[in-house]
Length: 100
Ligand SMILES: [Zn+2]
Image (tube, rainbow, N blue to C red; front, side, top):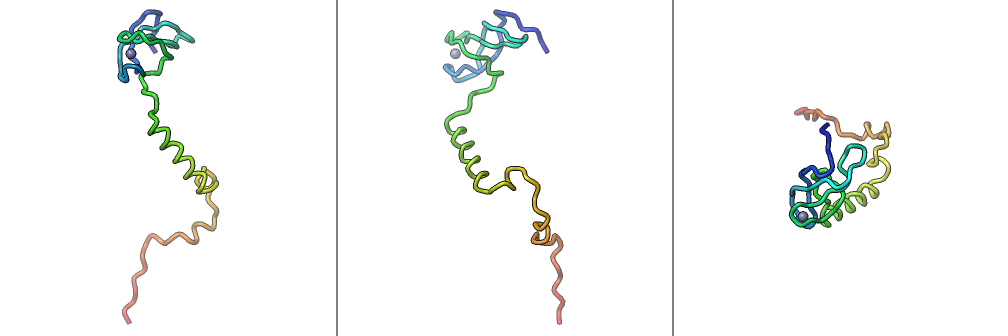
């Protein structure tokens, strides 16, 4: 873990420039950059750890994914499958049909 100091230049994603740009640290919390200022457009924003914010399209996909999970019921939400589910599972090895 590197020490950050106010005024240090670090990379971060700028939502105005929509790309990774140089940023100056303007605020530090718990030794981590909290607020940064884009060196290209001087826009202040929270430090994003170089991660681009999710796009509207990605947010929509996440919402759809949650809806699908909800429609599948508690099993899809991480609950243990019922023991009976093994009985109805198709066997891995197909049985050979005997020729008569
Ligand atoms: Zn910028």
